[in-house]
Length: 80
Image 1 (tube, rainbow, N blue to C red):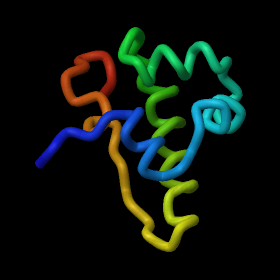
Image 2 (image 1 turned 45 degrees about the vertical axis):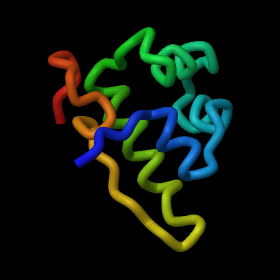
Image 3 (image 1 turned 120 degrees about the vertical axis):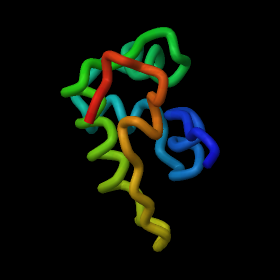
Image 4 (image 1 turned 30 degrees about the vertical axis):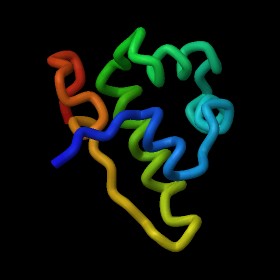
């Protein structure tokens, strides 16, 4: 199974970093660091991001279910 990244997921879902920043109440620059791999979110923030993307997913009729480990598989910091 191929590892998905936050950037690819946002592109696939048609969601912008700005939309995700607004939905999570985080700064755009923080989201940008997560997208570019410069930072790894805390478990709480990672779950919030995934829940928001999962809620957003399906607006095109093709609902998907993303997981924290699917987005940040190598991070020991982020666990579901």
